[in-house]
Amino acid sequence: MDKITLGAVNTEPGSSLNYKTGSWRTMKPVLTPENCIFCNMCWQYCPDSAIEPADPKEKKPIVIDYDYCKGCGICVQECLANKNVNLKDALAMVPEEK
Amino acid sequence: MASDELFVSGHRGCAGCGMATAVRMILQEAGPNTIVANATGCLEVMTTGYPETSWKVPWIHAAFENAGAVASGVDVALKKLGKRDGVNILAFAGDGGTFDIGFQALSGMLERGHNITYVVFDNEAYMNTGIQRCSSTPPYASTTTSPAGKVIPGKQGRKKPIANIVAAHDIAYTATATIAYHGDLKKKVRKALEVNREGKGPAFIHVFSPCPTGWRYPSEMTVELSRMAVETGIFVLWEQEGSDPRNRKISCPPKEKRKPVEEYFKLQGRFRHLLKMPDIIEQIQKEVDEKCENLMQ
Ligand SMILES: Cc1ncc(C[n+]2csc(CCOP(=O)(O)OP(=O)(O)O)c2C)c(N)n1
Ligand code: SF4
Ligand code: SF4
Ligand SMILES: [Mg+2]
Image (cartoon, rainbow over all chains, first blue to last red; front, side):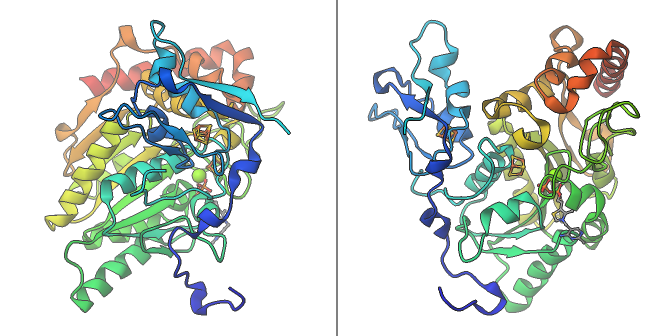
């Protein structure tokens, strides 16, 4: 876009996907897929829409999108597997490499 | 991201922004046939850095003070064009844009009876411009214009009871909600939009939205703080049809289940100075308990 549109009208819904916020991370959530209980709390609470939800019917765990995840840690904090002392943790924060 | 997400990644909100989570939940409930009028504030700034946008629904930028008026204009224009049916109109604004400078536009929107749902995202200060105190800022919170120090222990004065004031306009539906209770929040959004669809006039939802940057807490605690605000009785969840508070449905934790307010304060830098001021904490605890007892009568 080299010309400013009249009234700064934007005709590309969702175009912030062009901007990858993953580089903001200092810590990174990592999933242990076999421990995911498909509760989707991480998906529900992620402020960055950076989680593809689990499919309980297909027993398909969540997927974290590192292109956008900012590493806030909410998913790890709210994961129901993590909260349940009788279950193994599904999500953990680790320092970002590089 | 889910394929039908209407609030997409790539926005510039701080890591852990509670308001971003709230917006996602609201749009999940409202669906694609929705128009948003958004006041200036963090939400507008973080989602619409020209030439990009994080919105997948039609979105219009209002000034800081007039989300209510702009949303009203959208309502009237769509009616005139014969395109009003089946469209949800949402007005989104921060606490500054609602409790303070946008109050007049909001009150006018309520009085004229537009079928609009107005949502205030309350992060308890003017965050976008650097954490200035607002009439929504709770007593004793330290902000850049109510700094805790030798002169004052944070904000002096109370938090304006905005949802009560809105309900007193005799509108069809008023509610308070927060992200930790996502089912409750979505249910309230559904009811608000239903009221609009039935032509019963405006609805209002006060959404308590923790902000790691302004409240100075670790970003992973956003949802936990939203939960704790409710568990301590500091933020009370309720909904009400019409202006009669006797119709109010309140969920406030009973005394024996209520968490001490100190647990909520000690997680946040904006209240840290209070930890050395047990008298003030005791006084706040007493006020919260009294408020809850009165509400539950
Ligand atoms: C008339 C006017 N005064 C001041 C400003 C500067 N300004 C922009 S956003 C903002 C504060 C927004 O606070 P709030 O509504 O609580 O939203 P938040 O950023 O906290 O989400 C201010 C003071 C403005 N845009 N217009
Ligand atoms: S760390 Fe934060 S941004 Fe990243 S996936 Fe988890 S909730 Fe989303
Ligand atoms: S300052 Fe607070 S409300 Fe604003 S984007 Fe950051 S976390 Fe969200
Ligand atoms: Mg604010």
